[in-house]
Amino acid sequence: MINTPTMKTVAIIFWILAGIVVYTYVGYGILLYALVKIRRILHLNKKVVANQSYEPAVTLFIAAYNEKDYVAAKMKNSMELDYPKDKLTILWVTDGSDDGTNQVLTDYKEATVLHDPARNGKIGAMNRGMKLVETPIVIFSDANTMLGRESVRRIVRLFSDEKVGCVSGEKRIQDKNSDTASGAGEGLYWKYESALKKWDAELYSVVGAAGELFAIRTELYQEVEKDTLLDDFVISLRVAQKGFTIQYDPEAYAIESASANVKEELKRKIRISAGGIQSVVRLRSLLNIFKYGKLSFQYISHRVLRWTITPLCLLLLIPAGWILAVQEGLFDWGFYSTLFWLQVLFYIAALTGWFLENRSTRVKLLFVPYYFFIMNLSVFLGLRRYLKGNQSVNWERAKRAE
Image 1 (cartoon, rainbow, N blue to C red):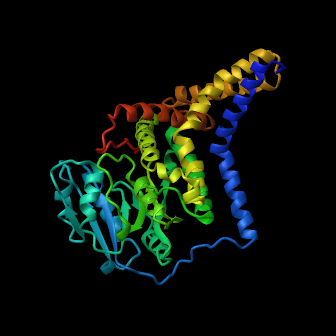
Image 2: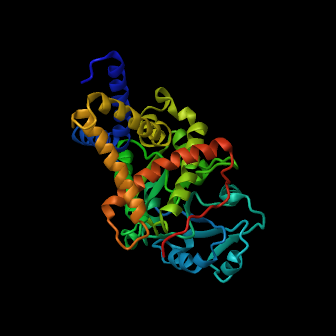
Image 3: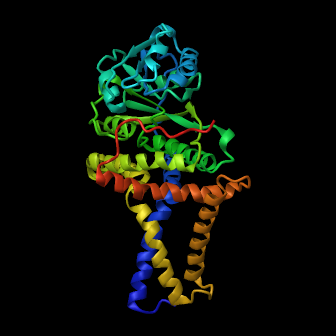
């Protein structure tokens, strides 16, 4: 029973921590959906109406480092896209590649290739290549992701609204790997993210674009600092800072295999987390809700909390829950002791998911807490890497499942 000032303080701290965690991963989604529903009922939503006949010239921009093995599939996919061939420029920037990626591309007259032997990272390649883009719309895509046939057309249509400055497509994880820890966790994560993006876009704007497939108005491109880790996020949010919205079409999609295993996914997540923390610092003006209103609310709720205090809250919940459970009676199954043992059960499930990851016995239900744990662990590892300043801007590709 909580009956001392100290225990009451611990209880208050516990509920603040729990409230932040619940809001970050569940509450924001519920609140966002409720706001969207209310606005629909009151006819306050101004949904972007795509002009079906809008067909400006477009550049498909592919920054690639040592992607020789993907060239054939990517070019076949790009040439089969449902968009007028005379209005689609396929631009590859292969800076730093030493595996012959640029030589393989010489076999394709449909491709424009820029190559510099120096390796200056993806940002260096993007900054250099964007100086030569002449079309009003540029679509960024990775070499190892295949696009849905109508993706370019669906993205471009949304730019018929002059208030739209950026459009994000959807990243889809191939289902064939859903029986692995990385596939089950990553797939579920992106399905939830897709729902949040749809509601974000309907409320006002998506907060960040998926690097596998996103587009901007070429004139809005702002050269990105050379040490930037999350180019897609920074580029898209800077467009939003200028007063334009980021829209989202889940039917404009890029298909990618899940990471080969959770070790590879952790490597990718650490880089993203380091980049996320860097982005929060670099885009700190977006935290001013009085200036950016709804955009700040969405940005803080959907991104900032995940990359900053929420993982710390999860960690602090363990000792706070233990103190309250012991005071109440650890094995008396009171309110706080029950919550504490549920915490313990969750981490046991995550540990079991890790143990079973590369074994023949696989329980997908256990892979979700394991992936969730890895996702939050990566924030601490990413913070350490960011503070040390030893996260390279050069490509650090995670191995993908076959």
